[in-house]
Length: 254
Image (cartoon, rainbow, N blue to C red; front, top):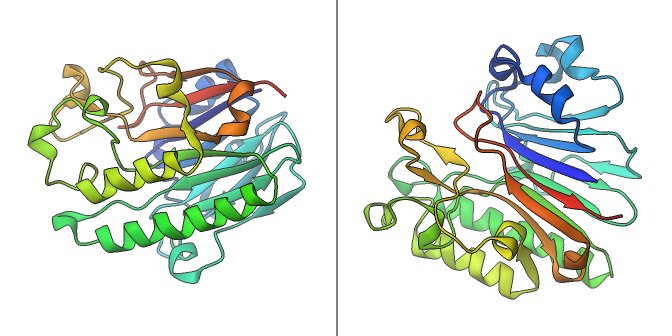
């Protein structure tokens, strides 16, 4: 199975930039989207009904904000819209799909916000999410977690670490959470295969950073360590346009 994750920064905007043409060419088994910024009723029929796929949408209460979606060739056993806590679920950040042999989390993790004001909310979200995943893993389930984590883990995960050491996305407490999550028994699939710097998934629009490749790697696929032997490949599709993020993905043996 090929799984791809992409923060599209507005599904209706990216639809006008060739999203469906790219989707048909790439044809992943599962496509996870973040920051869709739309309610289901605002979507075109061709977006909701891609041939060969079922689609699932989770929107924020605030219009034009956040939101996640999953397109899937396989029918999941069940779908959960959120993590089960209103303060997080009202922002439409999570879809959880049970595929029997693994549970998939598609998550748009919070940004720390201007002046780092939402960092406490972000850290609380991280902690609650980890608690939910640990419950599943302790019950013997395999998990696949993807999405915009909004944190670059180490200095090789962004082009300018020193300049961003006091900015959300690279704060010590944010990076420490990623470290602790991995130490708890999870794997950053891209870093499992690639140890080199210079691989990014997000570039700031305002500064034209993509043309200069001054980026951050903040989009991830994590799996529990027990699932690692089934990961055949992890990749970043850096040349796909349409958003300030690019797609990332894994090939998973079933």
